[in-house]
Image 1 (tube, rainbow, N blue to C red):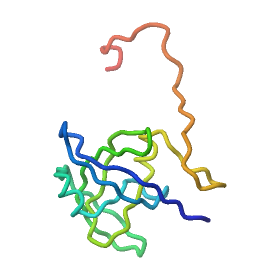
Image 2 (spheres, rainbow, N blue to C red):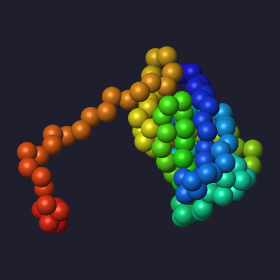
Image 3 (tube, rainbow, N blue to C red):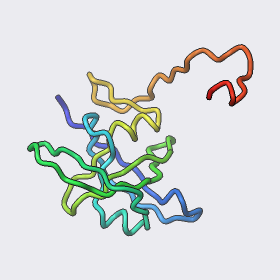
Image 4 (cartoon, helix red, strand yellow):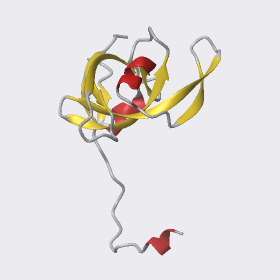
Length: 133
């Protein structure tokens, strides 16, 4: 199994003229959320939206703050949840971020590639929102 890194630019999605930071991310398809050192997220003025408990690789449980960041990888861009991690942690690009950008990791070459996006069939008539309740 190979290791894949990618450069991404991060910015605050709630600020029109937000400063951006570029980081090298280890792509970890086993991680749900992306992980960024808290100091980087503070520099971008990312708001802590909630706290969630995670089980770490050694089986211990730890609670971390979660925020939302705008990610730009090449021509792909979008927001995704991010974990406020302790200093010294390698930034991770998780599955949720990859999927929200329409990207996947080719299991053979370990390269990032566009995901084949699919939608279920569209109804033949426009639904009234009352039909959904």
